Image (cartoon, rainbow, N blue to C red; front, side, top):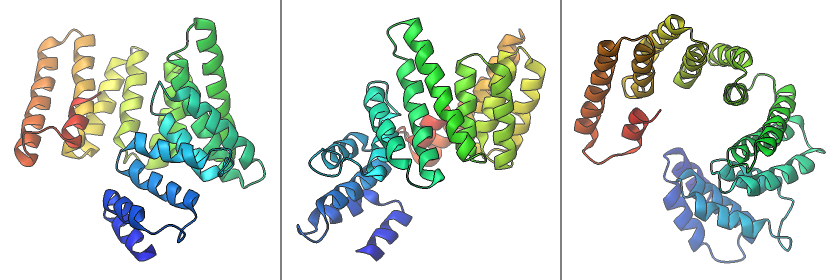
Length: 275
């Protein structure tokens, strides 16, 4: 079963792995261990609701309420939804508490997820005061996390996003540059963040240089969001015809993707179209 788990995980067939885990006779695995393994499979297959329901069972007070890995996974799932953000905050806080006695890495991960959940929760706050408090807590959690794991690129990127959303563009710019340095410029979302921060500062020509450089370093199917940025920069500079040309290039890219993968929308096409 361990070899099968490794093989199916390696080739991304986690739905098939989940089916095999469900067929294992009771008693072979502790049920909380099996629930967690199934939750991992469903999460990897983007079945977040099924994964979270299993984790809720596992984290019940009569089962394993202090399982830090289950708490972290549950909080991670909740951090992707505005409606589940409050639930995610509770899981993350429990994970932070349980991680106090463990190594710094787990505590950093718990604080990172807590910051993400607080940030998501702030988007649906009922008042400006509450939103401000949640944003402050989110930044505090992310800063604590980064003090424990200073060179984590994803943590640096999320810090940059949070600073940008709170209109602290100087700090966001610093984080964007640090992320690009940490990843060697190989991850396109770092270039997008840098370009967006520069454009928010009305440094359009610099943002355009960054976007063009990123396009040169980005694989064809991942260029969609960058082309959207280029078009918006052209509009901001009162160059509508050049913006139209950027959108025309984006349309050609989407049409080429459809021809290669079929007319039905899939993850790649959504990636091209979203911003």
